[in-house]
Amino acid sequence: MREKKIKTAIPIYLAAGVFVLLGILIPLTGIGAILGVLAAAAVTFAVADRLIPARTVMVREPEPEIKTGDETVDEAIAQGRRGLEQLRRANELIPDEVLSAQIGRMETAGDRILKLVAQHPEKLDDIRRFLNYFLPTANKLLAAYARLTSADVRGENVAEATTRIRDSMELVARAFERQLDRLYHDEALDITTDIQVLESMMASEGLLDQNEFKNNKGKDE
Image 1: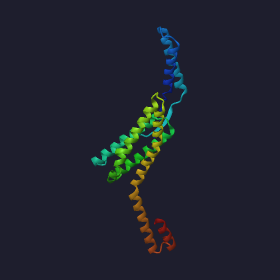
Image 2 (image 1 turned 180 degrees about the vertical axis):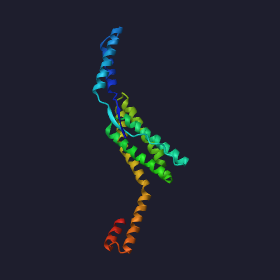
Image 3 (image 1 turned 90 degrees about the horizontal axis):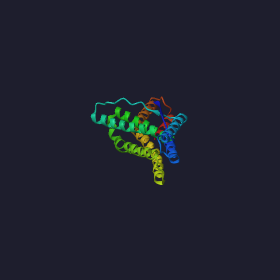
Image 4 (image 1 turned 120 degrees about the vertical axis):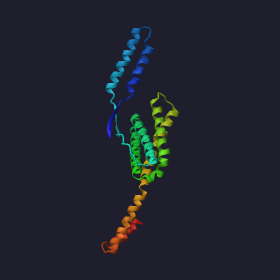
């Protein structure tokens, strides 16, 4: 992870506002008036750019390309990497801290999912819906959010749409995390079975008190 400074667009809006306002108040009939208004807008931009701090976001370093030797698996992982890169770019553009944290959770879970599939290619079919629907849909919604919030548009429809997108991202983040958890189901089952066998053998050898064995068996069940 590394820090990245993202400059705010507010100075541009302020400079544009000053230019429009002065253009209304001062007749732009001569070159001097036009240059004066441009100078005022430039000064406004420079002052605002200096006073308004840039936003700091944590950006993941690009992951090295993963090759498993299976063309189908490699292409699926590459597809997932492209989707996660879109998430990272969206995170850099969106100033909302809560939404940014949710996107960060998606990135973390998505990265772990792809790494796990690279290690266990047989799990590829388990993440098809994640790759082909959940990840692309999350990117589509975030692109719409960035577009709506960056546009100089206000209204009930825009407010409702951006609110619904913000609210849905928590559900999407949970879906990513649950998808990751499900991939560990078989491993968790194997661990539980190994522990049960170990306890049974220890009990048969007299290395485990019968009460302890019964208590542990009850917990497993």
